[in-house]
Length: 461
Ligand code: PMP
Image 1: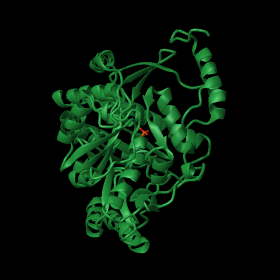
Image 2: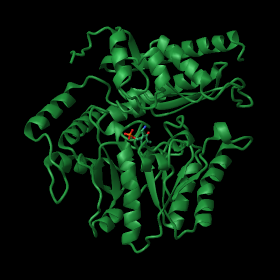
Image 3: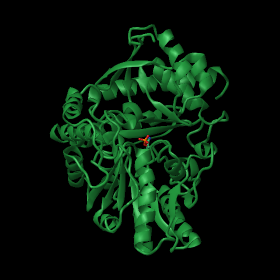
Image 4: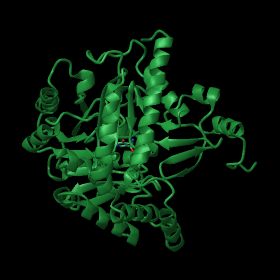
């Protein structure tokens, strides 16, 4: 076996990678043709690849490195915990200090009476937990038929069978046996793409009322929960009209169904407050968390449930759990991350200083001839690329062609910005400085100019 290190030529690393590594959400042909980008180091908001190129990571990895890269305190917390107790489980009436401490801290940080945590290693696992948890809750309450969970088209809740079923990505469902039974999808509150001539607030109400219609159609006695991301992330950073969430809340309250806020992206400062539910005025019974809880330094997530749901669950043995539920090392890393976010005032700074600055700059991109709308809340934003702003038209090319073009221009200009179809999205580390925001905007503008020029040169516009 050869020793594979950062010092090998990029082409060799890419060849080995393509030979043996199956990648998530990557086309095998692209991998074989071009190879993968090899990232070797990171600090703050900057990534370095194996050729020494540097990129401003406007995606915080996969929406997760809220604290920024290179905080050694987290590595030290992991090392300390590994030396003391590298592993023990939390099954069969056993516990350990990192799990106790993290659950306690989360109960303090989350709003309302979300005081009880069931740990997982990822957002997908936590959402799978939620499906079983909701169904067990209603069964224990004597309503075993309240099995249906209502969710939304174009939602993203994970990649496992359960969580991808909760998700509304048609291209994922097309790859085998999804959605699982008793998951029902309603339309999303995506005014830009689907609102037509309606006023955004009227549209928000209409899309929220689709929940009420679904409950009445499926039967109030069959619906157990509704799940939604406070702001859809992987669907394209879709900020719903103001009228949407209050109406969803009213409907959940009226029909006595559990409201699950999937805070995997929105949690831990992303929207300018600790949780997206606070920013959007949602009072959930259950929150899904992951990503920012550890800033991605260790795989940890969980379902945080309100007292009433916990009380019912505690009346039975919930036959569910993962070997790594409450893993001591990941809990220790998450605790250290939350300590730093709190003690250094990073969430407050992001919300009160960086977010307004980013908003002003980001929204100015709407003046670009290719940009239809530029929206941001806290430190998550999106722009819609369009050939015609007035009619909010789509490009004639296959959806995503122009977005991908723009993403490649971003890479070539030292910026990592993701595309979702023909929308460009950002979610930078919360520690991004105003100077770095300026760099982000300069590089994004340049990428937009180059995309515009390419579209004209190729007769696509
Ligand atoms: N929920 C949301 C809202 C997400 O954005 C994601 C991941 N992007 C998940 C769940 C799944 O999390 P994971 O990839 O950690 O399984």
